[in-house]
Length: 141
Image 1: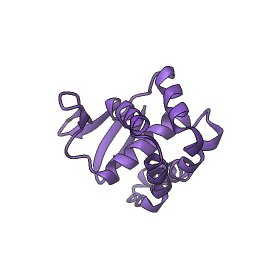
Image 2: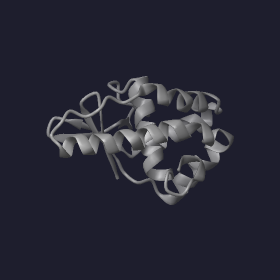
Image 3: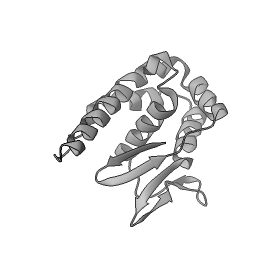
Image 4: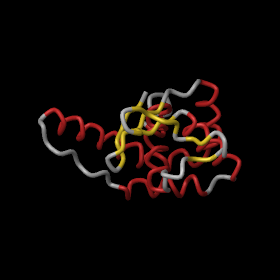
């Protein structure tokens, strides 16, 4: 499970099952290598954030420029592939709401929560892809 904060709001993503992970890798196909800068930025930021928290300091700000290649890669995919990836990730993601967490996917309307904007969506995708695919997909290592 990945736990991360975006704009002061905590998120959690559950591990995707193996078939969903495989489906995402297949759908990303040729653009998989373009996802790497976002994954590397997340890994670097997560380490820096953890070190800052351990020393009682404020954490670093995420470099959103690293997410531009991820956005471009996803925009190059057919709508069906993009919808599969976004849906699979957000159905496994939870957003902090007071003392608890709510699903980031509005199942009734079959779309993300209204509070999730594009910048937040791209960051959630980056964290979830790193957590689910980073350890066994060479392009994301």
